[in-house]
Image (cartoon, rainbow, N blue to C red; front, side, top):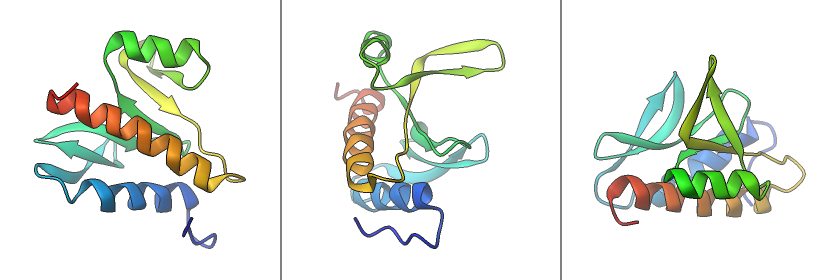
Length: 117
């Protein structure tokens, strides 16, 4: 893991993911709720929450599955639970593990949004 502990580590992890995904056609950096994220053909599929959690868009059934397994949490905006959006923790003590988990989640989200899922 190459994260510089002097910067915001969660953002460093997102930047590493972005470097990987930006090599793919149609992927670009964007924002969601003033937070940095990745989009595919204009649709956000992953972004960094203000609490340093990676928030991704997954098919509803898959989102329910990862929440039930305790791997992710539901995302609530105001009083509304977002049915296809889930968040994955950031663990400052395990940056490599966090990056691997975020990479897998972002890949699923990318595939879902791009129609490859």
